[in-house]
Image (tube, rainbow over the protein chains, first blue to last red):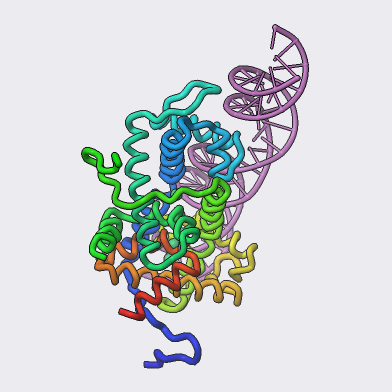
Length: 152
Length: 152
DNA sequence: TAGATAAATTAGCCATGTCTAACTTTTTAC
DNA sequence: GTAAAAAGTTAGACATGGCTAATTTATCTA
Ligand SMILES: [Mn+2]
Ligand SMILES: [Mn+2]
Ligand SMILES: [Mn+2]
Ligand SMILES: [Mn+2]
């Protein structure tokens, strides 16, 4: 007892877990952050190619809200990772691996946004939150989002 | 037309947005990542104090899945940020600011987990996903999660 | 086609958050 | 009360992803 305190009611129970399970959770988050740059870039590159005909560093920089040198550096990392093909001073293309990853990411992004919208959240907020959330949604959770969308 | 393609149906529409709006979204994600370390630490420290009586670096390291020197360094950052009070080789305490932040984070964490559980997701997955998602959930979205939980 | 403008790159800086190896301090057990 | 074990810190390294300033290359325009 003494669970109904003065002001701060405890609406939902805390799950307590084994230290290793908790550690595994944090490790998963760190891993997600490692893939995040690549995912956001290939997703954006695919969209730019589709809607603008080509993907140029200036535009990538503008949409990501970073400076062009940051894009140059990251693109060369993507190239090293085999996701992107490109020659200096030219537009950027996705390799097959890059296209595959982009496809997965775009789909996941759309599902997350659609799910948030289905909760009544406004479009700006849905897009803003989805941009971060997408990288932390497991396959299981993604499927739960989808089935809610399909059933409604 | 040409919307029902061979294999890959397009279940949810893509929202297309102004470059600045998109950039703002990515900037929000970067900011969230800047606060993430502090949030996870104070949340964990509060839990350890509550359940174990005190918060010790070894245990923090074990639960975060990092090595002790990482904890030492990060704790001194939290101290510099005014979230933690502590003397070398002794247990770690939260300042009032630290307690306030911990309270907000713990509540948010519980809401996100409860929400995922309400979608039928298993406990392990819910906790794992929530650990990342929590940092990207706006006040608006958090409230949407809560009202779904309350109405059900 | 030359000169000006725009785009892209390079070089070098910085903060963050991780690590290992070595050292110091505290705690525990005898 | 001392020796061993455990906990904590320090020092120094590294990868990531930002930045600015300066330079190079490409594109546009007169
Ligand atoms: Mn994203
Ligand atoms: Mn994140
Ligand atoms: Mn977290
Ligand atoms: Mn958390």
